[in-house]
Image (cartoon, rainbow, N blue to C red; front, side):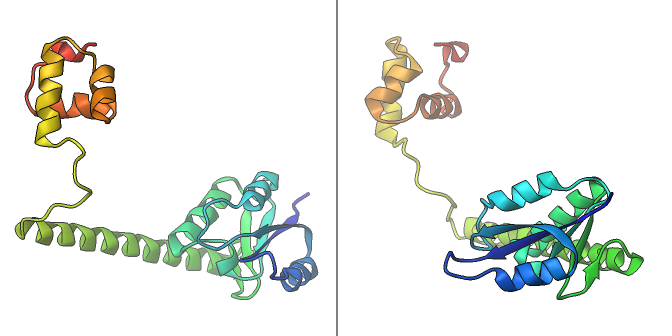
Length: 193
């Protein structure tokens, strides 16, 4: 039989989730999972347990939308996962309910807005990187492989040292040695050790 399962979240241990619990239980939730974690936190074990607990036909109910998703795109992602599993989603405060056609429409709009937001961020990032390149700047941190290290790596490789031994001697990883020697057009014995 389909059931309603609640999820609550408070940001700190000293906050009380009782208001959320009361509202979720009044709405018919048979069980409420509660995380004590920031909304931006990636690790929310009770949310994971809640999603694992849900069965096809069940409904996940939250007090407010911001209790579930870290961002609009994360919220849409979770609701889409629920839909794919045959479960519904309901938010008490905003009145969203994906078991209704109106609720599904609203979440399709949310999905479109989230995708638009992702595209804008990507476009701004690319424009910023291009502007920096035109000004002669490159992104990222400076390379650990200086010209002196690269020269030393070439000599050690010619003397038959392994990438591991070279990396240990220079204080870099073997993959860094391999990558820089390869991009420096240095023959690497087919990259063998």
